[in-house]
Amino acid sequence: DHSLNGTYINVERIEQPNATLKLNDEIQIWLFTYVLEQVAEDKDSYKIEIEKIGDEMAYVQSTHSRRLNAGFSLIELLIVIAIIGIIAAISIPNLISTRRAANSASAIQTMRLISTSQASYQAGVGNGQYATVDSLVKEQYVDSSVGAASLPSQSTVQQPKSGYIFFFTTTASDPSTNTLPSYSVSARPLVNGSNGLIISGNKSFFVDNSGVIRVSQSPVAPYADSSSAALN
Image (cartoon, rainbow, N blue to C red; front, side):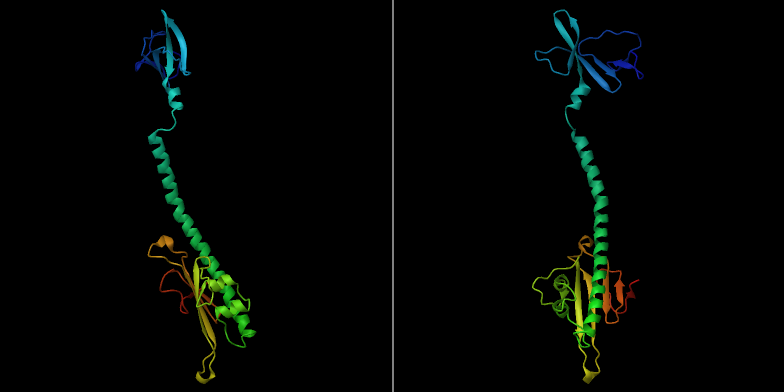
């Protein structure tokens, strides 16, 4: 017995320099437990011959070595599954929040594009009037993805752009009623049901012929309008 933590036979520590072993004795050295067994007809690879007793062989069988070849226990697998579940519970909400923020940033860029396109359209082919989304697409001020994500639109394929839908309102000038040309666009995130996890954006936006983009911190009604705070 030269081990730091001692050697045990049948749970009792060896105090004398030598000890006599009997068949089926359990020997514990640190984390390893061995059982002294009589040799079987088929010698397993994990048994090591140590002593000859009469006409029979005695072998040491390492239960620790057998455990290493047995794979994971049910408890270990459950612990791994639980850890994976905890990591998923932490990371998935953060991933969804990041995606919403990215969708909102994309909606802001689209609103700026629409505002710039409306100003160019009015000063050019519009002859002082603002355009519907179909006119902007036709004159190639915006691409078809904006048209498909806008209402009302003649696009045959309606599809949100980065999770947002854009609602257009266009008013033509009318000298008889002193009506000036105007437009407004409301960008609203796509919402399916009341579950917050399926809201595609975390804000709503608004822009009109003033060129000022306004924002509401709520992704649901009441949406951003002309009275909302200007986007910084």
